[in-house]
Length: 230
Image (cartoon, rainbow, N blue to C red; front, side, top):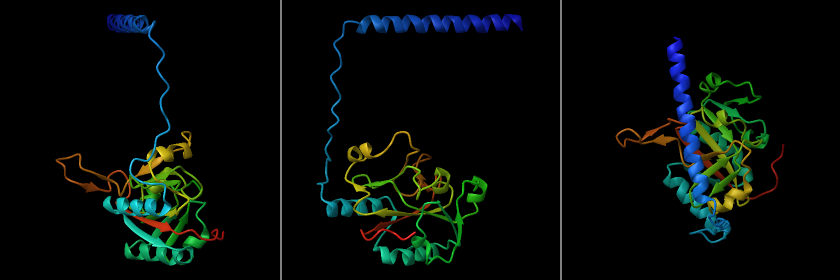
């Protein structure tokens, strides 16, 4: 036992010494190097002009290309559309983040589980769907970004149920590109980037859906209108 302990300590000492030598050589090599130039941050959108209608159209096409269902509606039509999507997918229950406006849910007949932070992963696994808002949607990549805001809730809510219905307010929440999105997002928040339903082709290039999150993503592009009633 003592010999093993001495051997382990010797190996750690050797590794630490080697690391110190390597770092010393790197510092010596760059000691007289010029300062690196500042990184350019004024990226431009590569493909999409800053035209809200063009960005919305591109977002719609890219979401559909990623096999998400895409729907457009006005604020007045939103409650009926949410209810219809739940019914069409056979969802009899749905998790709801605390900040989702009641107006969105006013036509729902499914059992609604309003999250207060106590829904466990096991409990969420018995719930058919989740209804949420988003932080942003990126047109060029067909990506929905969640940041844990009031209408989005905890990350588990949108990762465990098999159906995710996500409402995107247009044009306010639509940006053309990732560089345009980054300044609007806080790196201190729990960001989830969603490009279509969860899927992987890691094994023999066979697509399998629902591995890392919801098997089905339905995105509602909500046209501008008056603020939602509480």
